Each structure stands twice: as C-alpha cells, then as structure tokens.
Length: 96
Picture 1 (cartoon, rainbow, N blue to C red):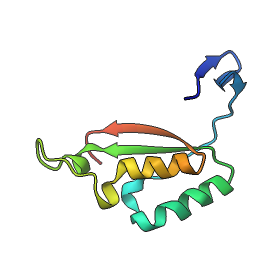
Picture 2 (picture 1 turned 45 degrees about the vertical axis):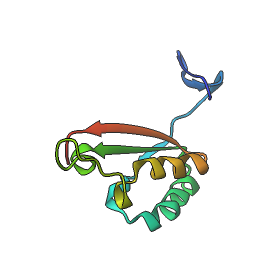
Picture 3 (picture 1 turned 90 degrees about the vertical axis):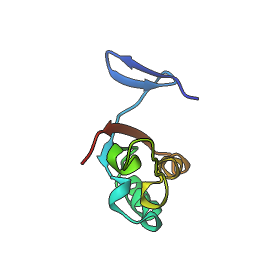
Picture 4 (picture 1 turned 60 degrees about the horizontal axis):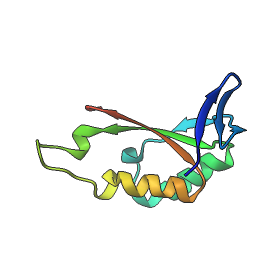
C-alpha cells in the first residue's frame, strides 16, 4: 500500500512528487462493457486519476436494500482502475 502525503510542493506518493492529473468518468453512466476502453482512453490522454461520484440512491434504492450489480458495480469499476494503474477519487453523494 503506497504512502500518500501532502508537502509544500503538493502530493507525494512514497516520497515522490505526484502530479495529480484527474478526469471525471462516472461508472454508472456507461455500460460495464465500456469501462475498460474508457479508462484506457483516459490513461492514454495522460490522466493518472479518475474522479467519480457514488450516487447512493443508485446503490440503496430502498432503505436496507443494496445494489452493486451491473452498472452499479462500484467495486468492479475501482478494480479496473487499479488494474490499469489509475488512482481513484470517490465522492459519495446522496443522489444525482
């Protein structure tokens, strides 16, 4: 697990400067079959971080009922980011 710190120069990972180059790509807006291609394109464009919101109303449509399947497969999306060497910023929100 890498060590992340904030220095006067900005972010550092394992003591090395880390220029955060992020773009938003919301997993729930695309079919799961397209995620890998979109993430590869983001990486090819020079991004090293993917920023996404987590629309909790998608994952908990009714109190106590949870859905993380199909386009709501947040763990699978984050796993794909990691497999491709992309960091992720995740921001939970109540709804979109």
